[in-house]
Image 1: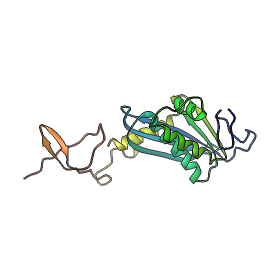
Image 2: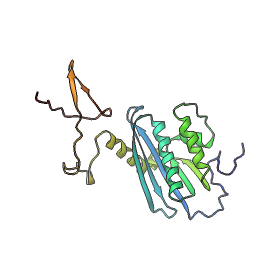
Image 3: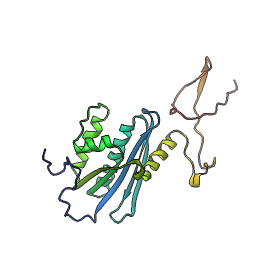
Image 4: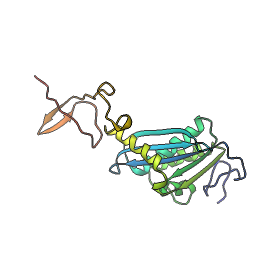
Amino acid sequence: MTSRQGETDSGRLWPPDSSPTHDLITAYCDGGSRGNPGPAGFGVFVQGAGGEVVAELSEYLGKHTNNYAEYSGLLAALDFALTQGHPRLKVVSDSELMVKQIKGQYKVNSTELRPLYEEAKRRIARLDAFQIQHVLREKNQRADRLANLAMDRGTGRANGENGKAPSPAQEKPQVLRGFVKGGVVHLVEGELPDGVFVRITPERR
């Protein structure tokens, strides 16, 4: 299979590796799900060619699978490169499945992942150069930390700076209304993610 401008089946940079790399950015991507499917999030740590920090991205995704979160991280990295004027991008991920699918080594059979894969390929085609590399999780810890922070935020477990819980002035508690039937609390409106702890205060009639 031959590659054309904007596509890759080997994961190598194109145009050839002899091209200047001073404008190349590297995005370390990770995604996770607590429950698979469950509360999910991604993290992306972006470095410049000199190793400087360019950006840190993270987002809570709601209830999804690990693979969905991994692809969401890749899409966020591609979007950052395109919108912020970085036409040469290297992606590093510990998701072997996603990396091999993007390289064309694995087929994408999942109906959930297929649209994400196709969107990723469209965004890759808009770059001047692209590379994707699989690494072990131990070499992707900064992106893993950001993904876990996103999941913490989504499940109400986020901490403030220096690991301290935010003060009431920093964070206003969410108030949802509901009623009890058969010993079970039913929300009248809104929803809460799985795993979140709540405090119930009975209303006076």
